[in-house]
Image (cartoon, rainbow, N blue to C red):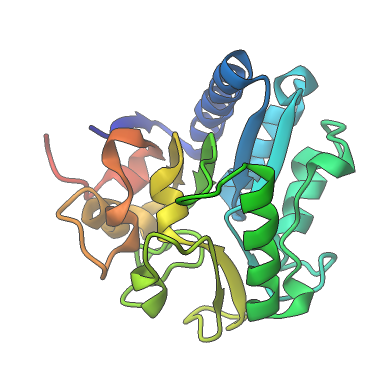
Length: 239
């Protein structure tokens, strides 16, 4: 069952999210001596990363991956890597060899193939998708997560897909790289953050029946933690 926490405002969401991430990373380190986390872009994750970076010890023994990336230069203001570098990676002193960047500048197909190979080899996935300890996600007003968009063919990529190239994103830029739905489903925990009234309808749809029209609704609910503010919770179904 989805763990759902509603907070009064966006700042409280970021605080709760940073605390949740720290707990999940510690659990992974206690169990396997290493924690593999995939990050997303966006305003709410950005503030969460700043709070997490304030306690660098929470990031000890962490291998950082990405849920998706735009096919832009890593220094471009649209780059998810750039956001993470500015808010978390550099402030927390995470060593560059522990940061696994999606190389968007290679283009969607070559970049996805390269990342799928690196992720599978690093996590020792010989059969089935690689298993991340935690994936941090936002949600779009249309219900998309990572760069998995409503009705897209990428949602039908199958259980063996690891990383996918996107050529026709409905949001600019059109070319992207994304983890597959199979990898999101295999993760030990997914954390989804939502703030603002513009996300309210998407949150409501996510918590309703699973549908390819709302990719977030396809996440494995028993492994999903949702933290949102009152504005984003306004339209969610009553229990």
